[in-house]
Image (cartoon, rainbow, N blue to C red; front, side, top):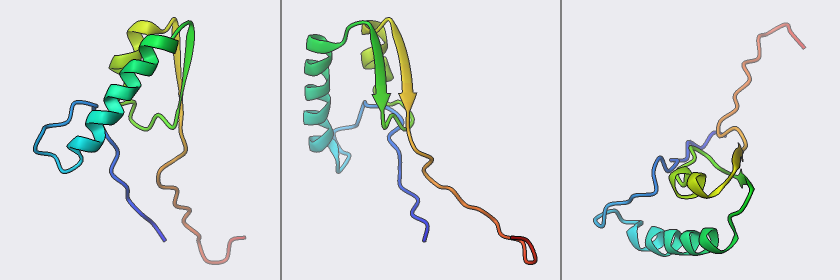
Amino acid sequence: MSHDLPRLADWRIKSKDPSYIHYYFLIRDIQSALSRFARGNLLDLGCGNKPYESLYKPLAAEVAGCDVVQKFVVAHKPGTP
């Protein structure tokens, strides 16, 4: 089964977006945590398309992102193992 999940491309969400309230509080909390804790090297786990990169990149000495492949499909040819 394959699920194509939408990925956030940017943290700036329009107020008419159905997810605006969710993202409003999420962004507020991310900004608060970054201002208190972002120092040195930063690892963004589950970074996706790195929608929050513009928030943390100026605060970190070095940035690395790590995420799983969203959709992984292997084509099987008949007669091959």
